[in-house]
Length: 161
Image (cartoon, rainbow, N blue to C red; front, top):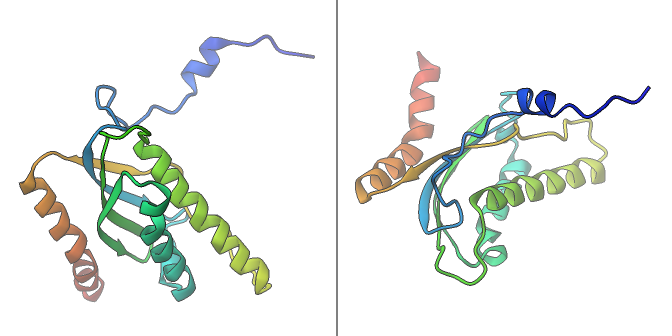
């Protein structure tokens, strides 16, 4: 039996976006991004996966010429990075598209590594979505850089306690 489309059902069970409704995510801006691993496992401690994450990060400007990279750190179960998007170009790109490409490319490369080496590892590495903070001043940019740089040190100190 076919059900009639219920627009109220679709509205009630749609995830709410964490993006600001009034912000132009293709405009010129700087962001602090955090992307978490799917299962909160320390999957990113794997050196091969770290290489994939770093190489994909470094290749983003070739794919998106209006993107400039800043700080980047790989933590055991998440990554942090700061990215600048120049919205004053002909082909603007949404922040979500950049993050989506990063997550997609890293996942495909990881799955290929698993397959090529006949390993029994999880292929799903990312949680859905990402967290972003819009950095609106030099002070917030410097604070975000400090946070990204110090995050590994902070985690080591917490693990000793």
